[in-house]
Length: 216
Image 1 (spheres, rainbow, N blue to C red):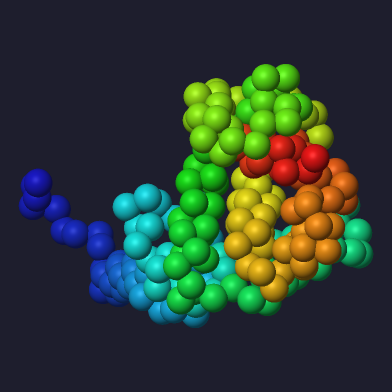
Image 2: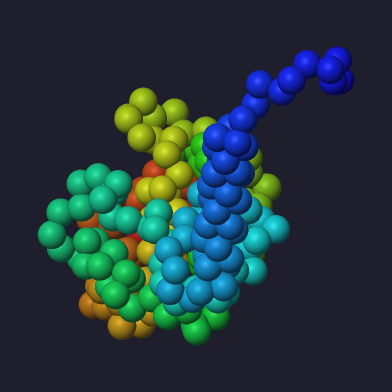
């Protein structure tokens, strides 16, 4: 309300406010541009941890693995078949492969479920030991609870390593040329091997059963 007093705001103040407004508009435009690029540019960086379910369709337009796919967070990756499987997965990711698209979508789900990723047991239940019927095993997996990993290790609740481990396991398992599949073929009984199960034996939920059951 103007009571007849002269305004103390000068032209310099008006100019300052215009500059602030312009900077804010530029910042908003830059953020909008980055988001548009992330959604539409096949080679632009992206992360699963910052991808919302409503934007999941952008994953099918990406020609690269997400930035949070990294073996840096995977502890104790000694030289050998296990590390080779991770490096192979990174080098042979193909966004045109349906199984790779499905795996990245599933990895998005994994990233949202942390820390409740684990089965309520660390060993194959007694009634399933030696079972070779996939229907029985699948039913047991689907009926079991998802629980929190009781490990006190630092980073045990960080989603990054889990989405990397999950995607590597599935892509390597479905690729006959992967180091994991070559090892399984050489073993003669489709065994994942002690090196793999030592690293992934307490793996999140259903894969724990699959690995323990295959490693007979």
